[in-house]
Each structure stands twice: as structure tokens, then as C-alpha cells.
Image (tube, rainbow over all chains, first blue to last red; front, side, top):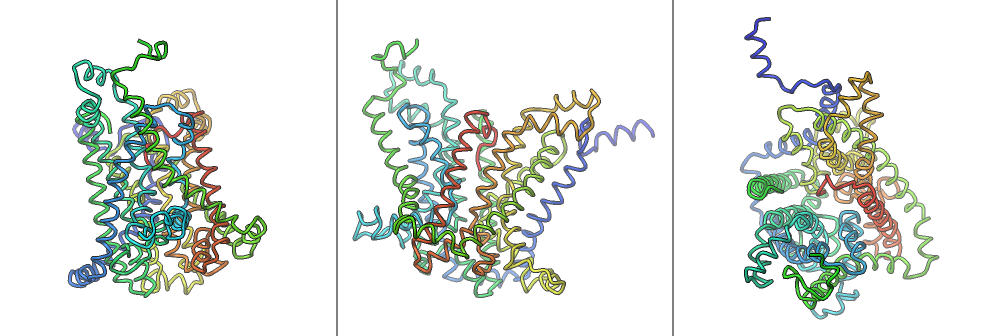
Amino acid sequence: MTATAAVARARWRLKRPSIIPGFGLTLGFSLAYLSLIILIPIAGLFWRTAALGPGGFMAILMDYRTLRALYVSFGTAFVAALVNVVFGVIVAWVLTRYNFPGRRLIDAMVDLPFALPTAVAGIALTALYAPQGWVGSLFMPFRIAFTPLGIVIALIFIGLPFVVRTVQPVMEELDREMEEAAATLGANRFQTISKVILPGLTPAILTGFALAFARGVGEYGSVIFIAGNIPYVSEIAPLLIVIKLEEFNYAGATAIATIMLLISFAMLFVINLIQAWSRRRYGNA
Amino acid sequence: MSRSSQPKFRSPADERPLAKILLILLSLAFLGFFLFLPLVSVFVEAFRKGIGEYYEALIEPDAAAAIHLTLMVAAIAVPLNLAFGLAASWAIAKFEFKGKAFLITLIDLPFSISPVISGLVYVLLFGSGSLLGPLLKSWGIEILFAVPGIVLATVFVTFPFVARELIPLMEDQGTGDEEAALSLGASGWQTFWYVTLPNIKWGLLYGVLLCNARAMGEFGAVSVVSGRIRGITTTMPLHVEILYNEYNMVAAFAVASLLAALALVTLALKTLLELRFGAGNAGGRH
């Protein structure tokens, strides 16, 4: 083999040489498994959508019931993520900065929504916030469950750990000396928090918001019990997919799923952009 | 310097005690309404008519079948994703190759897909309007509205859990230990078994724990592919829904209380792994 060919081959190689074995086996298995379980089924969804044609796709998408369901899903997820940003940052602050009895226990409890099956969360929140429930009865005659507000309650539950667990590690890394410097330079505590602490937390807060929002848009199990599921009012997009499937309207289910999937991919892209920007600017993600 | 030796001195980088107490109370109230009360209400509703009815609801044949199916589905799905997690993290963390970042993004994909869509993709793949479904049916293989479909949907939604824990952990540990073992004459399998595996065991356990919790509790994806044939294709979360829709509240919450107990055990073990063994710090979000 000539020297130039060897150089050219070295430049084009897929992987850096290593004495560790098993690259072909593990990467091959991973790619095969990934393709079979995730990629081929998702490609199938897009293929079925393409078969609808642009006209058929738009007709389903522009249907008033579909538009309302998308509006309910995105609107409630947005409001819930906003609430979670406010309270999630306060909870993260209290857990990182203050010491009080039961702090460890509460810190562990924040992950409950990750661990509790969504159907269990759904029926528990419904029992609690229904008109005759412990919390719901306090607010009568104002109804929480079986209205869009009920959906927001469920999505607050689901999204809370995303905000807390994204913001908390960044908060732990904050340099106390910066705050002390701000205070010695005459800033009051409120100015220090709004001008020194919050800017450093912004990327983490944005990421937490985006994660909670993305999860809320697709959430199904915890929402359908508390929502009341009234078409045009409190019917979420994932439920509409299930309804179309039960009517054997595969085209309808496919079209709504595709638009939701495209929006999730766009949001995933935005989250990656925020994290890349934060790494460049603050050296953390 | 040390604040503890001068308890009366308040650092300028501290809030006033009153503000502290108010923030703590606000957090506790928020978590109380959204986390603590729902959890308590599951157990209160389950035992509303006494322990006898609770027990009856759990040994009833359909509930027992649902418990059995849930355990079986998790027993298949978790080892599959464990094998994938080990293979993917070995390839990604121990080697440098082109397209690695893209591969990691693809592995994370199921986290950003609605569970309902995770089920729907298999309905489209194996349903009556597809190419595969009728073919498999003519061979006598049922995927949809049967156990294989439930397993597939569960594998889909729990796909990233183990890999997500192991990749950052193994990247942190580098390749030095493995290179030393190999240069001392160990075979590839020996290196993995005696060097890598002991290094990652707590992170591995952590990933399996979270994967299992999600596998047993998955609702949306499974409900789309299950067909809800009572006692045959209903997992515990689906059985909870059926009972709830029949207004059989005590039974619904009794089965739900088992799942809530599973969540509490998961949280306790997870916290133990984090505090004792530093597991889970590399993973970040789920």
C-alpha cells in the first residue's frame, strides 16, 4: 500500500484506533436495537402521514376539534411550566440554601412525579381537586377538576421535578463570594438576587421550562382523569389521538401524532441550543 | 470567617430570617398541595372501607392477573434495555467515532415523544392496515392487543433509562482501567466482567431502578396497544383505569396503592444510592 493511500485512509476513518475490543459488536447491536425499536416504527408513522398527501394532512390538522385540542395541550402545558418555573426555583433555592428539619425527605420527595405512575397521579389528583375532594371542596363553587384548570394542576405535578432538578445543581455551584461582593458594594438582597444570581441561573431555568413544557404537551395518563375531556374545551391532543384510534380513523391519529412529533423535535432542538449557548457563556449546562 | 462560630452575625449574602421562613413555608405549602396530599389520598381512598375490602380488591382474579402481567412485562423489558444500555454505553464511552453526538440524541428520543405516540407507532406497524400485521397473523403471531405489543411499547418508553445513566458515568471513568487490564493479558470479556462492571455497578443499579419503575407504571403507550381485554391484556395501571371508570373507587385505589408503594420504594432506594454511592449524579435529568 502506498503512503498516500494510507494517509487518505487515516483521514477517512470512522473511529480513532483503540486497543479496547468490542466496538463492532456493541455499536452494531446498539444500532440494530435502536432501529428496530425506535427508528423504524417512527419512520412508519411518517410514511403513513406522507401517504395522506398534503391536502389530506392539512384537512385533518385544520379541523376545528384538532386545532382546539392542540391549543388546549400547548396552552395548559405553557401555563403549568410557567407556574413550575416560579415555584420550582423557590423550592430549589430553599433546598440548596436553607437547613430545616425534614429537608432531606422533601428533597427526595421532589422526584415523586418521576416515580409515581401517571394513572395513579391522575386518579389521586382528581380525588383531591374534585368538587367533593379535600382541596376542591375548599374552592367551591369554583371548580378545579373537570376544567382546563384541572389539566394545569396535573401538568404542574408532572413538570415540577424537571425545573427543580435542572436548576438545583447550578444553584449549588453558585459562588457565594459574588453575592458577598454585591452586598459589600451596596446592593440590597433583592438587587443581588435579581441582578447577580438570576442571570447565572437563566439557562438552567429556560432548560427546565422547556423540559417541563415538552413533557406537559405529550402527557396523557395523569390528565385524562382530571380533565373532564369535553371536546373543544378540555380535550387534549394525545386523547384525541386515542379517540381517533378507537374509531379506527388511523389517518386522523397519524396526522395529529406527526404534527405533535414535529413540534417536540423542534423543542428538543431549542433545548440543545439553550444548552450550547449556556456552555459557551457560563461554562455549564 | 466561619459563620457557625458567630451565630448572631448574618452574612450579607443571606436573606432575613423572616424571608427565609416565608420561603420555606411557601415551598412546603406548594409541595404539600401538589405532592404530599395526592400521595396520602391514594392510601386514604384505598383503605376507606377497611382493610378487608382492600385485601379483597387485590386478590380478585383480574387484579391478580394484572399484577402478574405487570411483573412479567417488566421482567422482559428491563433486561432488554439493560443489555442495550451496556452495549450502547460501551461503544459510546470507550471509543471516539463520528456521529456519536447524533447517536446520543437518538437514544434520548423516546423521552421527548408523547407516550400515546409511542404506542401509536406500533399500532401503525402491526395493525390491520399494515403490511406486517396480517402477515404475522397468518402465521398465528399476535402482536397488537396481546402481550408482545405491551412489551414492545414498554421497551420503547423505557428505552433510554439505563443508557442515559451509564454513558456519562463511563465517559467520566475513561479507558485507563480497561487498557491496563488488556495490557496485562485479560480478554475483552474478562476486562468487562472484572474491571468495568465493578466500576459502574451502582450507576447500573440506579438506571435499572428507574427503568423498572417506569416499566411497571407506564400507562399511555400501553393503553394504546393493549386493547384492554380484562384479565388478559390489562397491566396494573390499565386495571386501575378500568376500575375507576366503573366507579369502583376502593378497588381502583387499592391497586393504585401498590403502584404508589412501588414508587416510594423506588424513591427510597434511589436516595440511598445517591447518598451512599454517589450514583445518579452523572445522569442529570430523566
